[in-house]
Image 1 (spheres, rainbow, N blue to C red):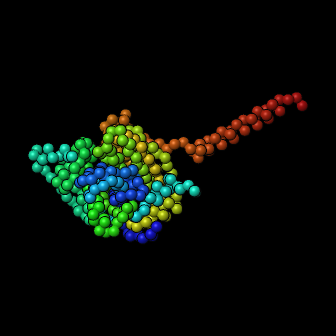
Image 2: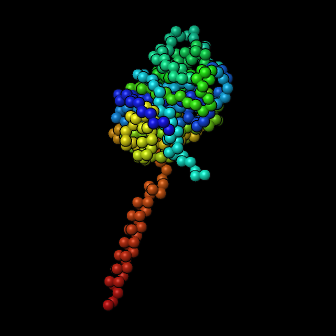
Image 3: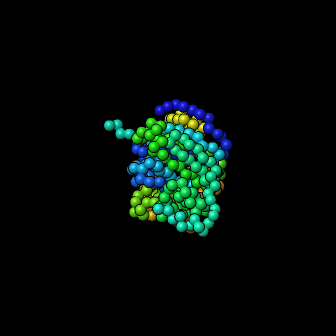
Amino acid sequence: MRRIRRRAQTTTTMTVAVLALTAGPALACGGLVGANGTIELGRTTTLAVYTDGVQRYVTAFEFSGEGEEVGSIIPLPDVPTDVTRAGDWTLQRLVLEVNPPERQVSLFEAADSAANEEAEVLLEVEVDALDLTVLRGGADEVGRWAVDNGFFLTPDAPEVLDFYAARSEIFLAARFDASRAADLGQGSGDSTPIMLTIPTDQPWVPLRILSMGLDSGKTVEADVFLLTDGKPQLLAGGRGLALERSEWASDLLLADLRSDENMDWLPRRMWLSYLPLDVRAAELTYDLAISTDPEAHPSLDDVGIELASAAVTPRAPVTLRDWWPAAVALAVGAVVWLLAGAIRRLSQEPS
């Protein structure tokens, strides 16, 4: 692991890191849009860090298949102010933390004549083999932009993009250019991490976008990591998202993460939450909302649902470490009760 440190901005931000992969660890996030070829989006890994009003959102792509160009659309909560390179192996280190090794055709084309609005291009950046474009617009405008730029969106794209545009009309379009990657000498398994700095006061993790274009019965798998100042309140909108780790992050883990490129902003004490997602695409109709304020519950709007009855609070499984203090207290109580009974019987016996 290279220990390269660069100073990150400390204003209220949200950061998105995007890694374009052709193989290797399953790291991906976003709705896949393809220019041509048969490229598929693999399992996703995401890190959302929220501290002192600052959210940094780190994610990555894994692509498999054939094609010259492929990309993804990611919904964002607000307009990014900066796009820079992110850490090289942050997500891989988090995966290692929870899985230690054992010893051994678009529908938007029909709407072109009905509307003249266009998506506003806010920012364009080229990083290695990635072309990154930040857009402002509704579902129709963003979809039309994708079509005009050579992408063909899946039939469910209008519904999914409209789901996000109702909350925020800011999207990141990331295109991976395989031919440029070859010119740069990037081979199978190489990655390009990207960091977007976004002012926001409502942290949430986009999940529904992962189901875009998938058959309803296909399984969507993802690893979601959260780092917060304290234990967060979490809210989802359906089944499939578990909370397998909820504890203070170890000093070793945070030290390792801070040593990665552009990750030295991480505080020295943070709460780690790990939520694996495993659900059929048809059931992934929600996002993950986060609140670090004990007085404020996560918002249904940020989950993307309207009915509170549909909300689900991911909870950590009960482990031996959770219940052993109560078990010890119960055992001590039982011993005391037995001793008291024995003493009482002895005192009642005639001398």
